[in-house]
Image (cartoon, rainbow, N blue to C red; front, side, top):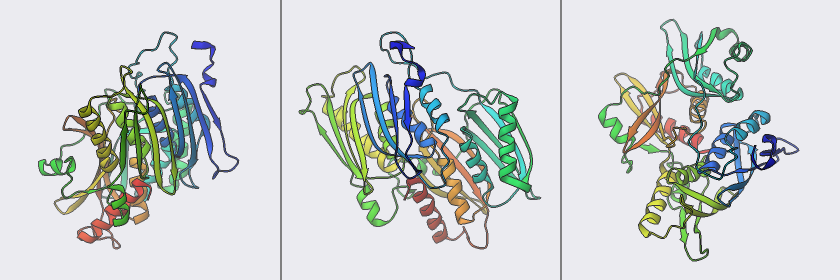
Amino acid sequence: MSMGMDSEDLVKIENGKSPTELSVITVNCQDKLGLACDLCRIILNFGLLITKGDLSTDGRWCFVVFWVVPRSSSTFVQWTNLKNRLISVCPTYPIPFIDLVDPVKSKVYLLKLFSLDRNGLLHDVTRVLRNLDLSIHRVKVSTTPDGRVIDLFYITDGMELLHTRKRQDDTCEMLHATLGDSSISCEIQLAEDFQQWCSSLPACVFEELFSPELPNIKDCSQGSNTELEKLKSPSITVDNKLSPSHTLLQIHCLDQRGLLYDILRTMKDCNMRIAHGRFSLQKRRFAGDFFIVKRDGKKIVDPEKLSALCSQLRQEMLHSLRVMFVNRGPDNELLVANPAELCGEGRPLVFYDVTRALKVLGICIFSAEIGRHTASGREWEVYRFLLDENTNFTLSNARTKDYTVDIISRTLMGW
């Protein structure tokens, strides 16, 4: 460990006195491009909301403070696992500062779950995996004619223990306990030659889903009219005069779940460093000041590059998630898409939130899959759900589809 620091000193977590009180996460380690984005993604994956933050770096060493709170009263946070995951992305090289390549990816395992079908089954399984710090990278769910479900989850383990029999047994026991009599069998094995994929989309659906203009699609900024009008006019102000060595970006807009992640992800993928940043949430409004430089440490003076960055930020803040229905003959398929990071990481908890919304609506999932598509030079994570009709929801009805999309969108955006 460089500079005489133990790994335990890289991350400090001061828990609130009650679940509703703010906890403070402090990270003090060597810097790398996009570190704040990596920290933010991990924190969100543990079911926490970031309400305030302070980031600073001299290009070699960084100091980050996040004030967080569980996003709901039912959120179960494994604080020790969270700390270990945050430590895992902190650079620890004992040489002068350089940009690191992305770390070696964790091994992927195949979880085979055989059970009886029931409403909310897929979400309950997803919730167990999230609580166990197991990340889903691909899923294939299918229902047999006799009402049984075969779930294939391709997962990685944040604790890096899934190769052990104990970790596998503990996972299956937790799933059996949650599913009760619905559970039939559970098996975990190493997934050989795992690759992200997604079955093809019809050309017309592909074009509509990934269109930057979103002509007919219900993107997730389409909440109520009032919320939409506020969100459609985020304020991004550029100041190149205040600091002789940094470009200041001031961002003010309506808050939504994952907004900070979208900002930090865009900065990371555009090769921008945040030398200092401070942001807060008050009454559902986000306000942030970010002093940024290019990868080479210089301020951004090219007007075209500044305009392109601001345009990209607005695009990601407004249209980072897309939700739409498509017809597959007599069946109804729900599509949810979001851009992946250039390093390949996906958006936190999208599958969890969509399955939760469908469970609340009482809509059964006949089959589901997660995969990747490439459009306009970028990779997208695509979630596909083939949904069952029921007496409460006739998905062939356009108004019911619109209502379903609205509920899912509001869930994803935290509205």
